[in-house]
Every structure is written in C-alpha cells, then in structure tokens.
Length: 180
Image (cartoon, rainbow, N blue to C red; front, top):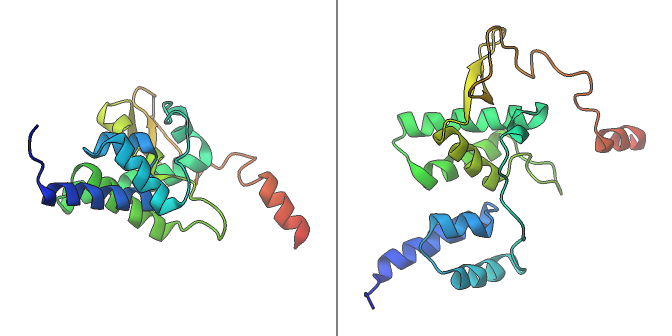
C-alpha cells in the first residue's frame, strides 16, 4: 500500500469542503478529488447535515439553450473564459472561482437557489471542452451567448435583445404579482 501524503490529503479535503459549500453533487466530488466515496459521504453529511441528493448529473446540452438558463450560462462561461485566459486558472479551480464570481453578480433571492448550480456550471465547461457547445456573438448587443456548436448563427440575436413572449411569466411571478 502506497503512503499518502498528509498534505495532499488535506488539500483534497479542503477542495471537497469548498465544493460541497458551493453545492457540488457527489458525482462531481468523486471526479474532481481522489477521496473515497465513503469519505466524501461522511464529509457531505457532516457539512450539510443530510445525505447528498441522488440521481444522475445533467447530461443534455438543451437546458443551457433555453431562455433564462442561457443568460446565466452565458454569463458564467464568459467569466470562466476570462479566468482561464487572464488569471491563469485551470480545471476545477477555474470553475469554482468563476462560479463564485457568477454568484456575486447573480445572487439568488432569499430562500431560492441560483438558476445555474455549480454542478450545471461544471457540466457546461465539460460540454465546451468536448465542443458540444460554443458561443455566438449577438448581432445587436455584441455579447457572447451559449449555443450548440453546429447551429447556424448568422444574424444571431440573444435572449436579452429578442426576448420570448413568455419570458418571466412563471408561476412564482404570477403569485408575487397577486400578493403585491
């Protein structure tokens, strides 16, 4: 049995703690740290006071293309690009730092969750790395927005410049309007 460095194990535990605090799912923790599943489960339960959520990770690119998620995903991926190109960050550290900056710009409402979770942000970066998604420049505002890699984007108009007719008309928005 090989001896593990206490320092490297402490770094892995620190990374896992930061990821859990940001809302990482167990599968993400397993892929980004070298800690055993059992240690990660114990750590998650100790920090959150409950077992991690079960289920599969997001696997479809389509979620990132819909109106509201596209705006949030586009903001995150542009922050992530900046962090990798200009701040010298890479890998999970770049994802974590970009996600923290995203949350500073788009803090969730009290009692609500962020539109883009850390797990979805991490998945988004993986979709970009595998060339399944890319960005297209909006012809009106000049912003870079998430699109499918093989979409034809000549004359592209983003969801902010060309809002869908039902944008913002959620059940919660109706309930808030009625209670006001």
